[in-house]
Amino acid sequence: MNAPTFRDSVDAMFRRAAKILDMPEGLEEKIRVCNSTYVVRFGVRLRGKIHTFTGYRSIHSEHMEPVKGGIRYALDVNLDEVEALAALMTYKCALVETPFGGSKGGLCIDPRAWEEHELEQITRRFTYELAKRGLISPSQNVPAPDMGTGEREMAWMADQYARMFTSDINARACVTGKPLSAGGIVGRVEATGRGLQYALREFFRHPEDVQIAGLTGNLQGKRVVVQGLGNVGSHVARFLADEDGAKIICVIERDGAVFNPDGLDIEALVSHLAQTGGVAGFDGASYSADGAAALETECDILIPAALEAAIHAGNAAAIRARLILEAANGPVTAEADQILCARGVVIIPDLFANAGGVTVSYFEWVKNLSHIPFGRMQRRHDEARNHLLVDELEQLAAKLNMGWTLSERFKQAFQRGADELELVRSGLDDTMRTAYQSMRALWHSDPRVTDLRTAAYCISIGRVAEAYRSKGL
Image 1 (spheres, rainbow, N blue to C red):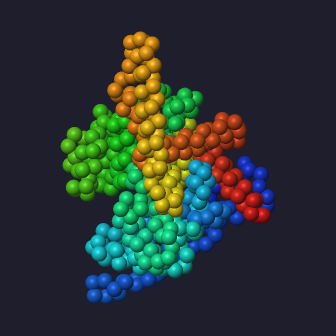
Image 2: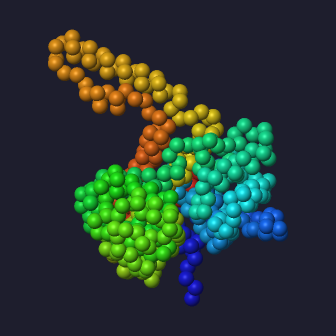
Image 3: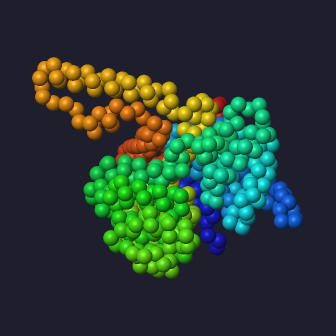
């Protein structure tokens, strides 16, 4: 018997939650299936011959438009994976209340096998094939970076779209995750990792939830294992270690794992990984070539930040974490999810935990449509008002001979107006807090909802269903 696919896992989790909801006949199926999936094959002349590439763009739900979802470059990109990721994007956007439907794309390519100028040619041709079918558009379909892509590829895509649609004043909004010079937003690169940090902080604000996981206190001193030290894994590891006092005791990468019970130096490890391509040989830690076994390291928090299905029916019973924070998409299969929940392991699900990326992408999209950076209109105005208040307080204290004055540290912090990064982080923090509170409220109020993932799916499906009802379905 074949193992369940990624899409099978997503559908199983969807159906588990959908059973709890009272929906009209046929609406459950309408929400579950992908509306459309496009396969494009195109040729590019490189190295003296024509190479043919295969790309995908799946649109799961258009209950809201534009649809949103990243584009990944990897040799193992396939239809099942793209449709599963598109479905997750629908549920994710609904949960954190960003006004997008779900989409996802991919290109079957190893980006490391091509020179930069060759990769640009491939990306521009892929963009052309998608854009001429309406699969890249500020108002219809807005891609973003994913595995194997980043700011560079998004800049190429945005420029190619602008060349094709020269009169579209909102052309920059056709993709998000761009560099600042191409219309990006401060804080987008760190967004998913920062959102994961905010998700954990909110979880630890609720002692009842922490107790269910068999933990106590806050993040200070918590033992953390991180699988995957890419953009997402490296950022969340840095933030938890440097800002919250957690100890990253193990990091797992393609070539194995490194351990240090006193906590790894994440900055040094990231540099070592960039220089050598692996974690082997890193000073200040013990090394094991068996990365799969390292997932079973005893810890307080396990953060799978690599590929889907890292935790499956074959290893779920051996996982020794009390809390799992899903940084990747689909790192725990539906079968493993049931095994872990039965053992009392609390899972903060992917459609909530890693929503920081799409949340800040939403902010970037809004910035591009408004054609003005966040904070530009009000920052100096807020500073002037705060200066006025501080001056008035100090004058009043002097007049009444109260013998006190405000500290310089307080005045500098209070008087300074918020810049774009502070506003982005504030908006992201609020989004993650609000979404978690909606999940936990359902988790603790409905006896049929036994875990956070089911709560997240119930909320998401309910919101999508309401959007379809308002359209007359």
